Image (cartoon, rainbow, N blue to C red; front, side, top):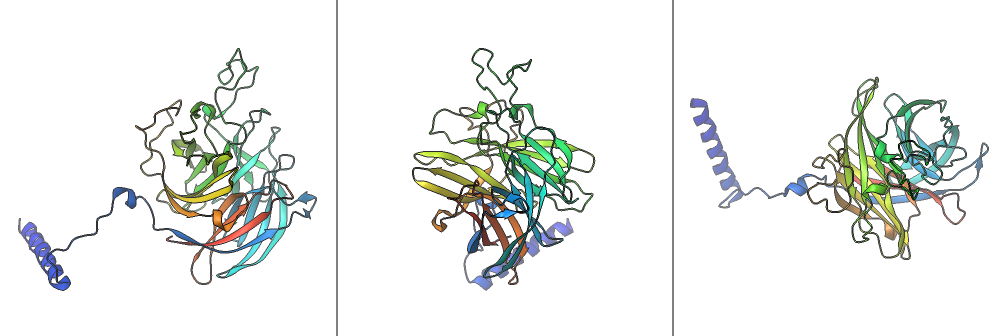
Length: 382
């Protein structure tokens, strides 16, 4: 009882001192909404951009860069090329300063040695054990399944295939179950859609080489069974959350992400990349749309902490008001910068002024009318 009295007296005196120092009649604490507490106070500043020419390098054409990862142990970047004929990654040396990108040099190229199924590589992360995990988008039209695979960093040899839930897969027409194919029309009924499968991949790894880490993989657009025909209903993308340790991988949960409504006349509208920025469930995401109004690119901050686990929900069609999606907040509309097709994003090193660098790269689709742009931003608030 004595301690309780002392605590109350101390609280009262502190309140009185607050009143005296501030010269006001109350010590009101600023009110912050629950929604605001979900997010970090982030902002970005565009510093510079350079263009990698689409030239030959050791028998390859430099292009199609769809993911990038930073390796602080050697101060290098690994950039993934989505060339189906020869999936590979390049080792890049970027000399960065607080005022720009001084140099951008390709040093090596490493082929990814997958299994016999073609690899449609789109996302890539560097693990604490210095291997690469790559997401393959897949293609229902060409019967290429989506994949999550681990590769040796030095040799490019396949090490591990991670299990993907069946709802992402398209059964072949002669599959005995016929679960993803209508038996009469041979039309697709479930799985990834063409060209909007696993586009995004990121990792949250606060520990050392032997510590578990979290892997997140997201689709660019909705699964077939989640697609609403009504154009007024935003796309609902699926987002997988794995726990990876040296002995096994465990799918912990699955969330959904609500895209912005597609701009009028858009032929492409999807999430092209995600990036974990801390261990508290905060991410960055690029939303990209292209159509009659040109290219639109926005950067969002995401918070997964209150999102509903939808791993047991067969379809997200229709009313999902009872479910909580991944929360998002606009960080910047990048469209006025006139970037090309941004698909890759990573945190780079701290710059000499102490600011956190953020690197984005565009995929030129091996098209001479497009560019492989490397953008340097300063990310504040992390």
